[in-house]
Each structure stands twice: as C-alpha cells, then as structure tokens.
Length: 127
Image: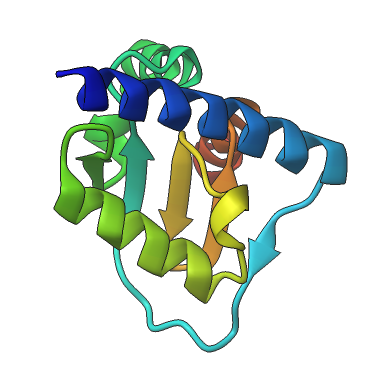
C-alpha cells in the first residue's frame, strides 16, 4: 500500500513537472514517421488538468462530435505503456510526458496540457 501511495505521489509530481516544462517551451511536438490512428486522450483519475478537459468536453458535447478513445493511465499499466509509446514517437523524452495528453492520429500530433488540448478541440470543431 505504501508503494502504491508513493508511486501516485511521484507520478503526480512528474505530471506537474512535465506540464510546466511543456508550457515553458510553448510548443507541440510532431512526428512524421508515426502511423495514422484514431484520436486518443490519455488522462489520470484525480488529475485536475484532466478534469478541466473533461468538463470542456461535456459542456461542448465533444464525444458526440468526434470519435476518440479515452485511456486512464494512473491505474492501468497497459494504457501507461501505450502513452509512453505514442509520446516517444512524437519525440517526447520520458521526463516530458504527463497528462492530459492527446494523440491526434489524423494530424499525427501529440498535444500535452489542458489548454492546448481544449484549443485543439475548439479548432477542430470551430468553437
């Protein structure tokens, strides 16, 4: 039980640090050698930034307008592994990866952070 709590604390610190790093850099990374796939939103239960994206998606009925997969990563090791694979394809280093994290299969982009993901949906749907 102590290991699980320590893991969640470290993961939370990692997510916050990765989000801060992303916003300081102010860019999105893309990759030209990734294969097309569906849009995937990676999130964590209890993540406040993820909750902000979820609220925006509910208010704007995003799930009714865009086909996307949602993958929880804090408690699902397979989803965490998939997040790492996708992020590495976009050129992210392991210490740069956090949630919320969106893989836009069509545009082959990785988008990290609540505001960039919300802006992605706004642009996609002309909101």
